[in-house]
Every structure is written in structure tokens, then in C-alpha cells.
Length: 452
Image (cartoon, rainbow, N blue to C red; front, side, top):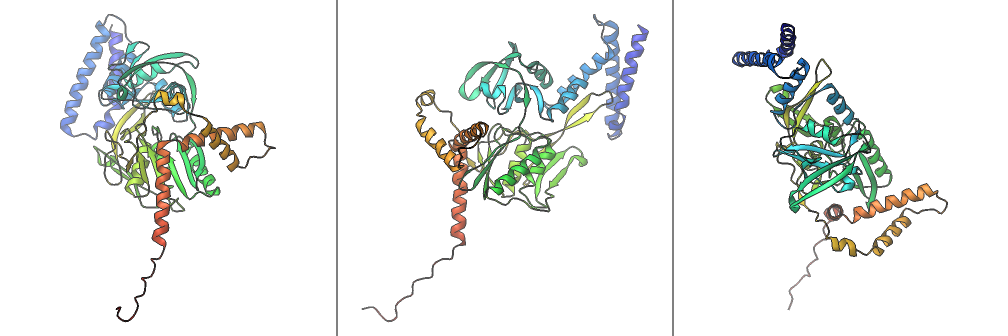
């Protein structure tokens, strides 16, 4: 028994030593309170080790208490075991197993920020804002993010059943989804929509996103684009430095992109564009929706406040808190909320989101309209697109298939109400610029003399 007591005490002392640096930055009264609580913590641990019905290892006790400690702060702060810390690093590399959803805790409920495009959740019909109320028949009330991730992830090819509440439709819905290894294509659907209006869909901010985005812009430039629709709908964010790097493509040096504010002075930062070479000055519309979150909200807020683009769609998710990932000596880590994001004009993103300049909602078509929709007009438009790209009879079957897929994607975009709105705005800007650069006609000369 004494040996166990010494083991736990040593673990507590090791834990206390980890707090020394942090404690050195706290005032005297707070230090005294903290040491008093650590004494209580130590006593509780040794009591559990001595008297609890089942034998517990010091590691299990410490890890369990750290999980509870971080979970009590906010939904985005968490203690990560070495395995969870490794998984988090894997996520930012753009390849992981699961359903293809970004989740958060909102109003105490497990909430889907967005389904990632072309993933099992997306294909199953999961929507941004859906509340997961059950996983495999178990209620998710009071579930932590890390526990939810463990339940939702699994071996590729296996099924998981979730029950969601879709509040805007007052529906409880069951989904059985087959897990897959998720491959994220962050920059996609780069193309000319019509009349030199370029389009880029940015799905997420990953390690290589900035390079891929620059290549997409270069491709549109080579095709003669002179304006841009940037689609950030259902973009849950990702790496902050990458989001800033992409934002710099549209803002000259010195323009504010985002600021952060925390408890300490060192957490208060202002990030300016460092773009000293060239930036894209095309007229631009940015599309957002309720699945636009975090880094994508920073981008949208930056171009909106700098009057660089018109933001169109519906209000974004509102995840504007900064999580710092802090490695710990044993391979575990902390994901800790350290500050909050603010747009260049000082608007808080967290909990409020970005309001679009032009609100364009998308109502799902009625089932009858889906069933009765005539496909002939759509086929004609697709054939016209084939003519536009000047297909040659000698092209390979693979090339023909790719071109047909691109044509179908383009037709879907041109039928998208929000994309249509963006095109109309850009055409309007073009007409306005044309009129504003024309000289006003000279006033008609008046005849001399007096009319009788």
C-alpha cells in the first residue's frame, strides 16, 4: 500500500512541476489558491488509490482528471492522450478514417459544423447544423468532443448509426454510414463559369492548400478570367497560417487580416498582409453558409472589412476561438483555447459569425419538383458546354469522361441559386465600371436669338 502511495505522490509531484512555469506568471494570491487546490488534488488521488474498489494506475487517474479539467473550460479545449495527439496531427495532413464531418459542441449539443464534400456523410445527406443526438443508439448528452470522435471513427468499411435532429425541418433522422479513409481535396472545381468569371471551391485549409490555391489562380488567369467567385461554403477552416496565406492573395501589404485577443498581452495580436509582390485585384464575390467556419470566416471577414469583395449567402457558423496545441513531455498534449478572433473592423466572429452583404438563401426543392424535373434542357446545356471546350474526336475515352464530369459540375454550379447571384453581382460591377469610365455626353448647344 505504501508503495502505491509513493507512486501516486510522485506522479502528483511530477504534475506539479509541470505547472511551475505557468505559476510563475500568476500573482501571489492566485499562486496560494492554486497550491491549496493541488494539495486537495493530491489527497484525492491518494485516497482513490488506497480505497477505490478497483485498482487504478496513476496514469489512468492523472489522464482522467486532466480530461475533466480541460472539458470544464469550453467545448474546444481538451486533453489529448498520445494516441489522440497523433490523430490530431494526422487530421491536418488531410488523410484520416471516419465519416467526413467536422463537429463541435454548440448549446450543449453535438453539432455538425459541416459534412466534407465527396465523403460518406456528404453522400448520405448529412447537413451543416444537424445535431447528433445518438451514436449507435446511445444519447450524446454531455459527450465530449474526444469521446464523440472515438465513437464516430473506426475501421474503414464498418458501419456507424447516428440519429440527428434537423431543427429547421423539425425532423429526427437516422443515418447508417459506412466509414472510409477520408482523402481531402482542398482546392477543387477550378473553372470559368461564363463571361470570364472564374470559380474556385476551397473546401478546407490544409498544409498544401496555399500552393494549390495559387496554382488554381494561375490557371484561371491563363484562361482569361477577370473576376472571381470564391466558394467557402461548408469550409470548416483548418490551419490558420494557411488561411492567412490565401487571404494575402487578395490584400496588399499592410492591410489587416485578423486580430486576436486573449487574457494576456502576448495573446493580443494583429496580423497584416505581407504580400509585397502581386495580388489579385479582380472583382470578387465570396460565398458563405452555415457550414463556413473558423479560418474561412477569417478570410471572408478580412475581404469584407477591407472592401475587397462582396460576401453573399447566409450567416456563417461563428467559430472564432483560437486553439493552441501544446505538446506534453510524454507525447500527450493540450488543445487549449487561448484567444478569440476579430475581423479587421473589430467584429467578434465567435458565436456570431459573418453576416453576408447580400443574403441569398437556398431552399431545397420539393420532392415533386425533383421527380418531375425535365432533364432535356439540362442535357442541351451540357452539350453546349462540350462545344464550348471544343472537344475533338481524337480525344481518349478517359479525357471524354473527365470533360463530361466537368461539364456536369459546371451545369450544377450554374443552376446553384447562390452562384447565380454571385455571377449577377459580378456582371453588375462590370457594367457599373463601364459606365463610370465613360465621359458624359456634352450638353446640347442652345440656338442663338429669341424664339417667336
